[in-house]
Length: 172
Image (tube, rainbow, N blue to C red; front, side, top):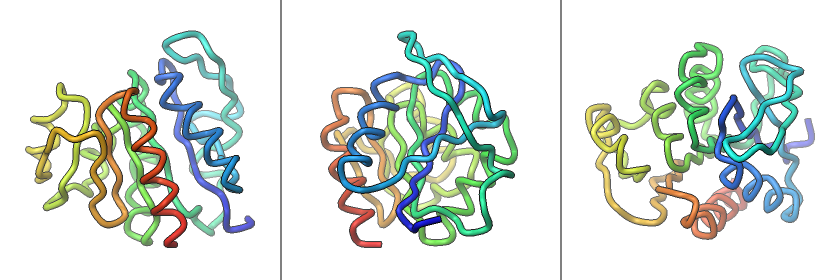
């Protein structure tokens, strides 16, 4: 690993824009997005029909954890949170001082990872209650940065989300 790797998680029915926007911005800023899924190698289809190939599973990553993880929304987070290995990976990256960035329904995976207690966050409004029950302080803002945890609500927040993600990665 070069130290510039950032995981982007994927599962069926991921939100296409919430995957591709950060993916290409990371590349533009010199990072290497690594697509990770519960099963790999495998192709996954987004809600709007774009196809992504996941090359890695959590088990196939080296022992050196990447600098961060991006969790796109859509319906994929509901499937991702069913994978103990994915949940553990997100928690490990967070606890090792990595950046964890979640948009839209990606917050449901943060709930499962158990990393929200006392953190100020945002998400798609329909999972607000879940996040609060997990101990988070939910606010309705385009992007919220709580130390190394970055959260956003929806696709129209992507410019703010990606800017905060890149700023957090530059501090690492």
